Length: 228
View 1 (cartoon, helix red, strand yellow):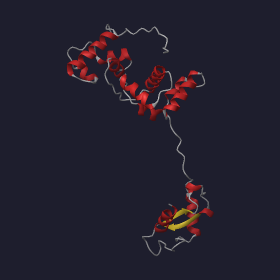
View 2 (view 1 turned 180 degrees about the vertical axis):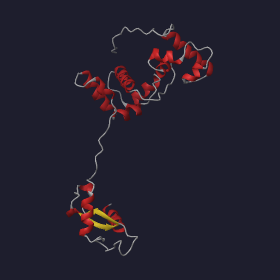
View 3 (view 1 turned 135 degrees about the vertical axis):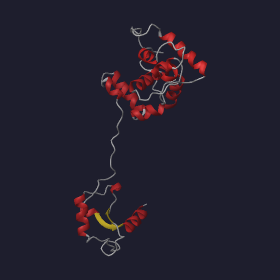
């Protein structure tokens, strides 16, 4: 199984306690209070705490990461894309293959990550897409920073909306009355006119004068029912 190279980092700056000592303290609190997770305030209120939660968070890069290191379930108030990418990479290395949704879910649960596989899937637009991005970054084809961006799918309209000027032109051409039943608001104030696509936009019908007609709400609804 492949492993990342060890990196020498100074991690004892603001507190005299080591990560091992802090983890032991967090575990002691969890056991004493029978908790699977707890907040910073909960821990700070404990008379036997080893250090303030702020110092612990700085040491581990976040309170959630400290809880995770101690074997507790942690939930971040804010998603950290880098952590999700790192978790996916770690799972990938463990599996020695691109992990499936189920494999990632089990991995995150096993290691007490503060997010779910579904969260990763939604944030990155699919696990397959995330895997491709990681591969591109590994090959130098994509900046590392691009991995941490939320996927924003482009929403495509099924058909072009009818411009206001075209809609008004169609109503005027048809005499402000339904071309099927002749109903019009002038004679009956309850009549509601709509500009309808003769060939539905979902089937490629354009929003042009030739493909538009004036129908009352009732006739237009009946037409839609017939199309279905």
